[in-house]
Length: 152
Image (cartoon, rainbow, N blue to C red; front, side, top):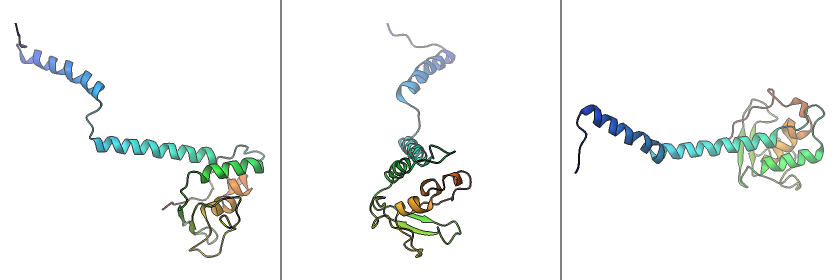
C-alpha cells in the first residue's frame, strides 16, 4: 500500500532528506561554465606554482651554481610556447619592450644579449638569461625589488 507524507512539515523533511545527499553526490548546483572557470583557475595556480618553483633561487645566501641556474632557466622556459611574446613596461629603458619567441639558452642566435631596439629586445630567454637578477648572476637582488612585469 502506498502512503504519502501527511503534513507539510513531514514533506519538507522528506525533501531535505533527499536534497542534501543529492547535492553532495551530484555536485554543486553551479552552472557548468562556472565549474569550467574553476578548472581554469586551478590550472592557472598550478602554472604559477611551477613558475615560482623554477624561478626561486635555491641558495639565496651564496647564490646558485651555474649548473643550477641553467636547470632553473630551462624549467622556466619550458612554461612558455615557442611563439611566446612578453611585453614589459616598467619605465626602464633597459628592460621595456618586446621579447619575442622562447629561445634556447645554449643557442646564441635564439638567446642573444639584449638589443637596444624596444620592438625586439630579444627572446624570452634573453630576458631571463641576461636581465632577470635570479638568472643573470645577481641573485642577491631577487625578492621584493625584482622587476615587476606585465605579460600580454
